[in-house]
Image 1 (cartoon, rainbow, N blue to C red):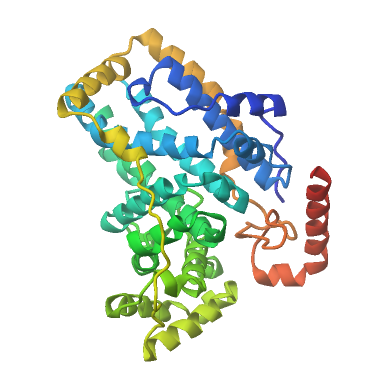
Image 2 (cartoon, rainbow, N blue to C red; image 1 turned 180 degrees about the vertical axis):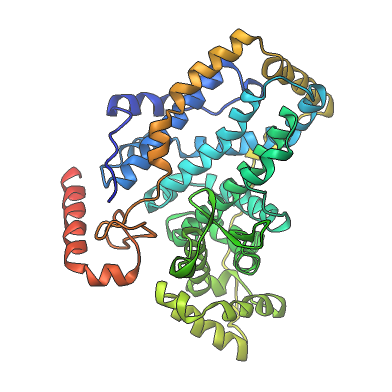
Length: 442
């Protein structure tokens, strides 16, 4: 059975940390002041996970929404993505044999923390609604990460690559690849939550999803490529579960991963959404790509995700007929995304100067500076807490690994539909308790 994790932040600390959340300046990344901000974001993320898993009042989510800080978290992810594209490579050229790369790694990890926090928050429709027009920036960011995931190979596991790493710079590049993969996998889930909550967002987001990025075909390509599964050096299958590559055998190998489940639900939601024909003309190219999904909708998958039966029927009909075409597209006032473009609006000379400054403060640290940073990080990344948080959530009825959240209370986890139906009286009682507590809080 699961072990209860105590809160790591008091309500007053949550309010203080959220109120202090401000967009980072790219020139300040890696500085002492920025490390304090990173510490706060990491602690908010850890507390949000505890609240979600332990079926507690989600104070972090409510506080972030009430303070209007959802756009700030998106900005943090975008900011670091620009930094690692424009500054990190130049910085490592200046100091290829640096003694330590701990601070650059913290900057890279900041992006992963921001996306992980968004993944936890955006399960709820009110968090998606709180994004407002910033959701356009998030759609741009997540689709770019997914495109990169499809076009690149899965990074080797730490055990496979560690023996080949000689220099700290090479180790940092390996860590960058690992984090990029982890971020992209989380982006799949974030895209899924956006797809499920389009009715809570501006109409321009729907247009962005269907028209600008063609997300249905993008997600269909993911099903075909299966980046969460790959062979190891011995030819055995590795599956990416809860941020780690694991060998899964027997009946467990038949279970879909959380990411794969979210992906299928997102595809179903987008294609069966009544607004789909108004924004999405399914031409021959799109049709040929989408009907490929039929071969993946086997009985084992349908038993785990029964709502996909509707998608299977829809695809079968699409294969023999033409999709309905909207006679008139709705008028949508497109909003231009500015977050990334404003960060990129520097000259080549300015980027080189920033790279020089960051190499100085991140890679030419004194031993005392390194000790001070390490001491601060030991508080940020408490190993006992991280070990507990890395464990997957447990099913509320049987204690096995939780795969899906209950669609009714949107809080309790369960391992599969069979267990949920078999233990429905117990599961219903938990749902009733969660809902009564929620109504009492309101």
